[in-house]
Length: 271
Length: 66
Image (cartoon, rainbow over all chains, first blue to last red):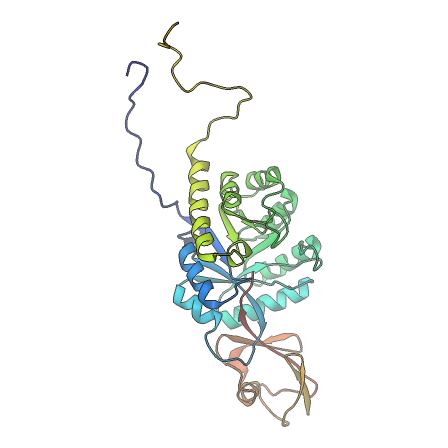
């Protein structure tokens, strides 16, 4: 044991990640779930339970006259907080009205603000997004904007009073992962509000990477709901977010170009 | 008179209120919100708000998404 230094025992690291706070609200999980793409409410409920998520997005749509269990019944049973979105809106005006309807229908002033440019890319329209964010903040909403992976735009949104920013890893539903990790790191360094990686996550390693880059949380929807086994993928995402957060805070080793032996160099036989 | 309810043209009696409209079309009255002519109408005034001719009424709720 001559080469080993037996230092003091490190404090135990809790497997449960530290608290995550948005607009003064403490959330027990850094994994947010979207409900889009779910093929059945039963499989969605199982996946939500497995994910441990406490903040779950819903869209706002015209009521249908079909009876039976509704998404709201499922989410109430899961005990999660609702995060209505403005998916499908192309203009600030549409997004503001949708957010106001969501507040009226669901009794929450939290909104995931999405203002998209076109159906093919589903990329945010930065001009309309800033306009809508400003109007909603002025109207008392807690605004979480889905944004491009642009540090300047993210800073503008934070400066307007948004409660968090939600940069994309890659286009919605693409599963392409995080295409520009450097931009995500720059956003983390640039804004003081929580950064929630949103869109593009395909599998657990993407979620872990987001957390290792310094994001405060990750939102997944299609990656879970459209997986062959949504419950298994939700479980994987839960662990990936915890692992990525722990790795971020653990102080990783620097990257080196050349090897650095981990076994002792002394006492090798025959030398 | 004719109105547009969730994208479909509907005939309703003159003087129908938003509250009656939900009942007449068997629409749920909880977890929903109403926009009339692109303005939110708060739940507290549904019972007093009459639907004008040619109104554009949207009744929305949460659905899977995002």
